[in-house]
Image (cartoon, rainbow, N blue to C red; front, side):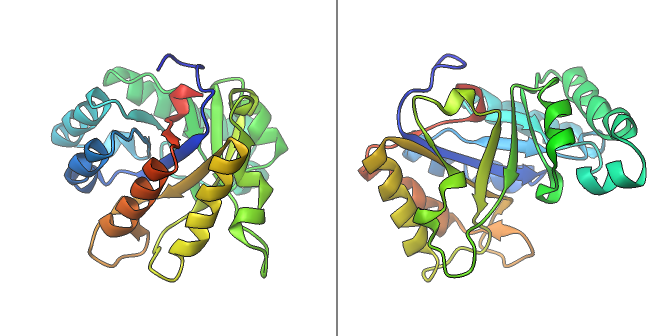
Length: 233
């Protein structure tokens, strides 16, 4: 799909940080469902040649490799303690330079720890086509009723800031909420965004199991939802 061509209702799945080996292990799962997703990379200067090669393999498989900052600094906090200009010079521009040096051309940025405000949004949208942060429903509110993670498919390209629901540690108890959100997206011709970090069967701080990822991919395919990277928007 050409950049900026998304008009189909779909799912925007993204994964953050630099879990390259585990992401590579998940490639057959995405291939099985013909799903393309986005990987937002932080600490690019620390990556080994093997990890960089792995990211190129992931990109060649049709997935998007995007920017998650140089040192995973919290944007709003950093700007309060220093300045917006210092944050851009220390965290954003060097990360883009490192990625370009290794043959990647980032078009989107995901906020570390989902820390953003109006000034950081404005600044980043002068550098990237899209930015991503995470939000979740209020207590007692269902995910399917949480409008910020949804956007009409025919207008998603105009939404500079994509808001995703974090799905780390999704298990059988959480899956019905996600399934209901997917059903809403299909019924209303919307795009819905989800975000996690590592893909692994090993319990850890920020991860989602291959089982949970496959459950989301399977239902999305059954509902006729497309899989969009941020470059499709």
